[in-house]
Image 1 (tube, one colour):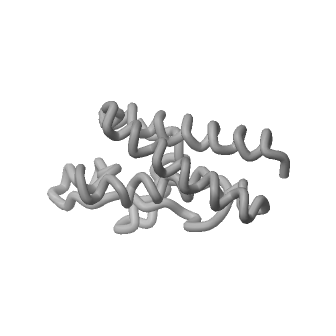
Image 2 (cartoon, rainbow, N blue to C red):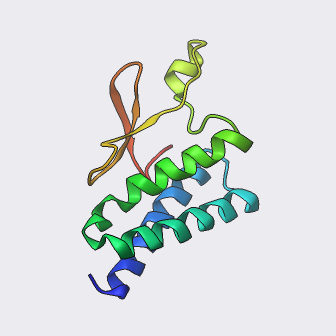
Length: 118
């Protein structure tokens, strides 16, 4: 894959995760900087394994989720379960695959594609 293709995929993954962060009111400057750090690490990864470009969106989502856990807490919280008093984070499925979705692990239900949280 060309470097232009890799950059396009990285920018697309960035746009998707920023859309989700914005939808859940988490996209402050510190979090956006964290996203940029994640993208820098994933850039190296995808340069080493160009065939993995289709997995970038899901991997970036998982990386940001992991990074937020330490300083922010669980993100994104499953809103339907949180309303029932059982707050937990949504997961990304497939863990390594194209077209990743945010999924409630408790209910086994796809909530939204990565980039389309409300």
